[in-house]
Amino acid sequence: MAQETGTTCQQQGICIKPTYEESPLSTDLKSPVVLRAMTCDDLADAIELSLEQAWPHRAEDWELFLELGEGLVATLDDKVVGTIMAWRFGSDYATIGMVIVTNKIQGQGIGRKLMQAMLERLDGLNVVLNATAEGLPLYAKLGFEAYGEVRQHQGPAPTMPLADLMPGERVRPIGRSDADLPALWSRASGMDRSNMFNALWQGNKGVVLSRDHEPVGFALLRRFGRGTSIAPIVAPDLAGAKTLICHWLSARAGKFCRIDVVEGLGLSKWLEAEGLPCVGTVTTMVRGKPPVQQEGPQVFALAAQALG
Image (cartoon, rainbow, N blue to C red; front, side, top):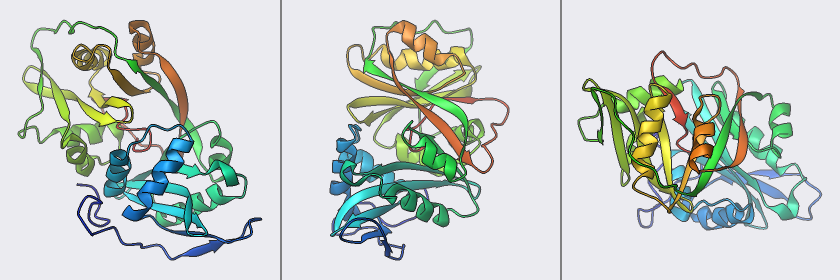
């Protein structure tokens, strides 16, 4: 599992304890806005905030995010009006996501204060996030620089045949013996993903792409949002990524599926042509040094826009 921030929200009667000192925020509002650590008890309000933004996250998605990472909330009169979350990857990197402020009080500086408070927690780490167009100006002012894009493809899965495999190539289910897959993902992403892999695979499905009996890529099929997400997708090349996607889409024709594709690797145009449209784009930004991918596999699709 990822860093220990407390027990899971699903364990009855136990919640993650706050570790952030409550901090009042001066605004034009009549009551002070207070920042504090996110707990399991805040998730119902957090879900309301994401629904207000037309984001598809289920209660289970929020619970997983909190189990894997840490969060802060902004409260007004004891009501959660803003959220931010972060996930640490080894000693060098972290990602930030789920930055939301309720529409009713946007423009009061609450988003900035949430970002500043979380960045204080992540001091010394290179921080990556995927920014919507609305968030870009704020993140740029806080020292983030753009270095990539992610294209969100989703919709009813098109009817697709299984890919023709090359000699020596095989697609098979992930097994308990596939202990090298977390390291494969870490090399591809430039961040230590070892703790996160098992948490994402648990309760979901996954397949390995092997060539000459050596694992060279994998793709998980996970319950997420409005249906399922093929996330992440790690492959040695574009052909390998297509093979993994064909495996999952061929079994899910007509069912809602989402893939958050890293732009610039050729996958987005192919998905458009195959009938899984792009519905939005976010900008990948970093405060510090961008992660450096080691030679070999590449990340073709993210685990989630928030997780990277």
